Length: 286
Ligand SMILES: [Zn+2]
Image 1: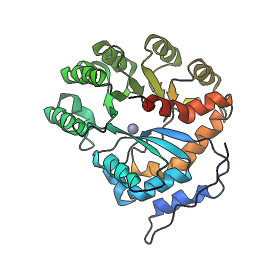
Image 2: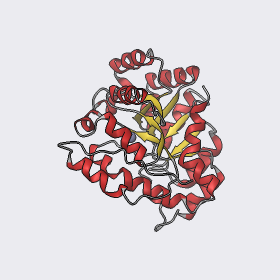
Image 3: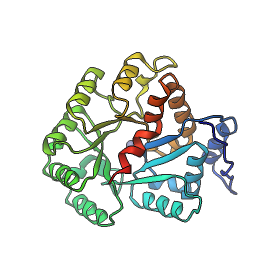
């Protein structure tokens, strides 16, 4: 679809170099596939450089129509939602996920820290979150009692999980709570595609997220192996920017341009599903 580019991104006085860097690639942007960004963090470190208004303006300029938002701390996500809610032209869907981290080091031991369990319970009382994550978990750590409890609780409450995990941890979580819905961050990062394909066949509740998957690019085109997998499971993949460090924000235009270029080699309906329809469909039903 063709869409006019809104010039809603206004430089502010004292705009950072980062913000200016974001401006550069925007002028030449033409027809664009809409995007649902299924892996976004608005972490505390980014906030001194980008206000919620600037993040939302960036989304608009980049054709991002929906965002799975997860931030450390969670206030980043809540502030984006509040800012968008004040905007009468609200045209972006924010799907909030509860991140079980207060500070960066929590990623290493959140699953064995009683304080995190309290944080999760308290945050979920807000009643706004559609899932928990992104969290990091590898191997036998996924058998920690809290991971098992959290997975079962997520399944009971109809919440998604967003896991940066190896295949072993994904399978352990799915043994704790068969059928729990999981977005697998960076699908295939440490897992061969044969195993990924086997897991997609075995676990219908598993959705693949594609940030940091350099191998989907087969020399400027979608690699044949990834193309075959996407054609086999067109409803099971989503895209993400993964703004996990502040510098990543300035790369968002290039990240999206690369996704759009690669998806252009797929049939239009499959490209649209992976770019945005899957994300909207996943969260349109309660
Ligand atoms: Zn991430």
